[in-house]
Length: 329
Image (cartoon, rainbow, N blue to C red; front, side):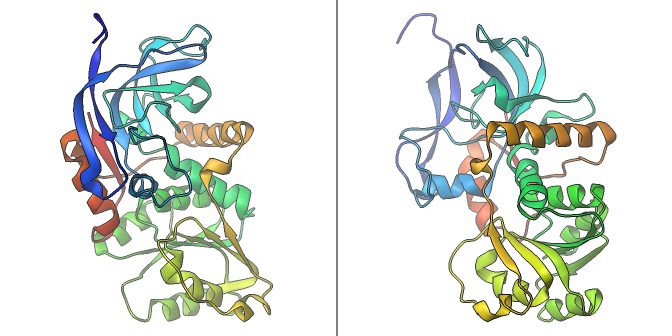
């Protein structure tokens, strides 16, 4: 071991598999930022479903092993590379991506994926912005091209992306409907921008939505679990309506004819396809949301780094999300 090299605790994945492959190590070298990079002392890190897919080895993007998961950290700038002039030691920041991984005491990030965290938001909230808000913004504004006055159904609205979508849609002048599977989830959805909420555990909830929206149908559906809901979504859409697929955990049979009379669209979205310019655009809009006050992340379950495997188990198999899951350091 090199002398003087600082060590840190970090979660490492040495092989793809279940939550048990997440190993907490305390002998990991603290990275050193070069050029346009910054080193962040991590106070909190968001846990996202995509991190479980990557860890299992079933996702389209496979990192080189071993690696540290996590992209959404919030904390304080520790050191900066020679050309990272936008930041200085002590700045409060959050990220939409990291280079070295976020489930760690320190994280290395490229300066263009790091953003100032306003004083009014704490580090837990900062760790809840990254993937959820940037994904929700891309889904609504870039992929669905929503217009003020249109209706949107956030199908699975009580988790990180869902609540972000409700807040953004309301701020942009949409009629916002949401679904959740628990009473607490429904309450939180209504408190965060939805005009109306439905319980997707009820057998006839689709009929209730149809009755609520009437003949016209729904213009945009933000879909978190397409393998369960896509066929139902097609029956709810308005003429020219579109389903934006944010999440899916399997296959589903649909009838393509359901898209024909309505000339509706099914559009997939992934945040990682965004260009650098698009990220800057999303960041500018979200920064305004923080300043004005409509962007307010809701924190759900919190875990220490030691319980990361439990967090990964619960984000997929839990009984319905309420707010954003985070790791605390």
